[in-house]
Amino acid sequence: MRDFLQLGPASMGIDPSATLASLFTDNSWRLPPARSERQVQLHAHLTTIILNNDDDFYEWVINGKLETKFSIGSVYNNLRVQGPCPTRDRIIGWGLRTSPLCLLCNSAPESRDHLYFDCPFSWSLWSTLAPRSGLDPARSWSSVLAQLGSLSPQTPRRRLALLCWQVCLYWIWMERNARLHRNIFRSVDTISRLIDRQIKDRLLSFRSLNPAASSTMMQQWLS
Image 1 (cartoon, helix red, strand yellow):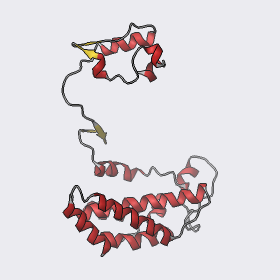
Image 2 (cartoon, rainbow, N blue to C red; image 1 turned 90 degrees about the vertical axis):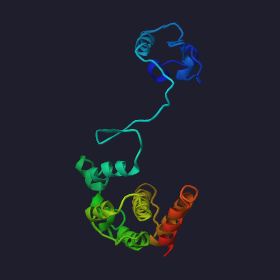
Image 3 (cartoon, rainbow, N blue to C red; image 1 turned 60 degrees about the vertical axis):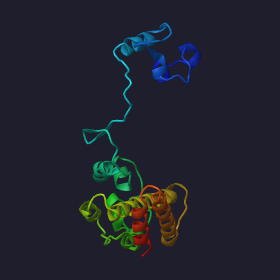
Image 4 (cartoon, one colour; image 1 turned 180 degrees about the vertical axis):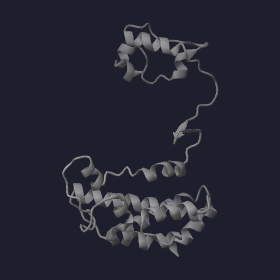
């Protein structure tokens, strides 16, 4: 309401810590008198809303479908094929002047498919870490997606494979940005150790929720 009314707490006449429930009593809204056109609009809109005692819940719209439960898998399935990363081929496509070369290998034009994992630098990471998650490392973006999509759902193997893939994507992109914006260069071995530590920490965090799955994934990762 503060953003819509463009007023401070004193002008609004509403305590900053107030909740909607505290402003709605005996089936009616308890609001200070309207002093501006925006407040009149707000009062008029609120008269169309009746609060109830039902529990609140989030609604997620993924690919046009309304869901009441958030699914990481659904989000990745929807986003992964859209190629939203601002890689240099896309930046050039926007009309901006920049070198087309990959910041990691400096030997080929940078694109999403090159970065994951046609680039020799990123391939060195993925080809080493993917087998530890139980995956046969594939080099092309589409092949990796097909691999991940073929794994049985709700299994420790799939969960570990997705975790490994996501963490690799993240650190490769972080390294790319570190070189671009801060002129910081890290080796494959250094990034591999960072990924290893992050995945171990994540697997340990699963222990309280599902000890058996956590143990299975950790054994696979350490094998």
